[in-house]
Image (cartoon, rainbow, N blue to C red; front, top):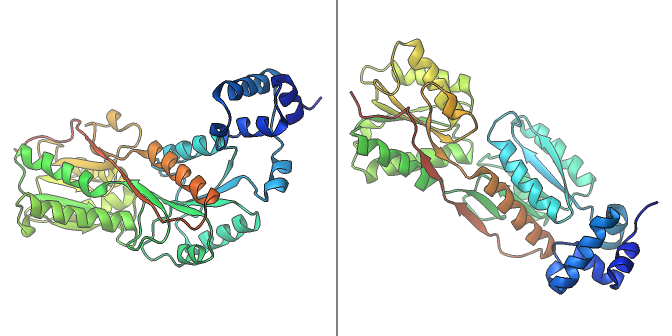
Length: 337
């Protein structure tokens, strides 16, 4: 037999409206704590499952959120999705995850499909600096939050790591070890993260007194290990190679480690390497990779909370949250030989 909201209310000896508020995390604070706990205990005891369809008809919401990812195979995104999904599930939402494969045409088609399914809001993790689709969605008033990226103009809410401080901590660490020639394998410049980390690298070099000529930059065409291999070969084939390299992300850094081994160079005794993101398993590399840790799960959770705010109160200010990054020092950095 299906357990209804009225059954829960009767078991908890409250009005159905009170039971409804107690079972919804967004409105639970409107109910006395002892009453809310009694309702929750009754719901668990009876095995109550909310009727999302009926709730949606009543509130004119689908209780679904679209999560738009550029590449689900990138280890960066699963922890972000996990953080978002947990926060959304607590509020009674499900997530509809789509993978654009970094293709703007695919992204447009998938967004159209999500809109047709009446998703209540969107978490957008694609990071192109010029993004007409986001601009149009913002103009249409769709609740959305940008994840792991910010726009130059605050059109919609955004949650990301403090990449400027993160890159600066990497440069400061290398300078403290004695490095004066530090290269950067930058991410794609059409992506906000690639451009932002590149600009942060230049600013940090100036801040710590490094000559521009001693801060060579090579641009990778993707956030991938093969792109890191190609960029590292170009940088390390120069006559005056750097003694340390800061990579645009961990995958590019792993490509750099591949090239060092290919060229018979040792990390860190010949070249120190730092990544960015702190994706899983880096401690098992040889050598374990020093990296800037992006608070991935927290970014997802905070983005979900901002989105729930936007859904509940549309038209508010476009908040922008930058969460602290932390340098995780492992064995891939040391003093220059």
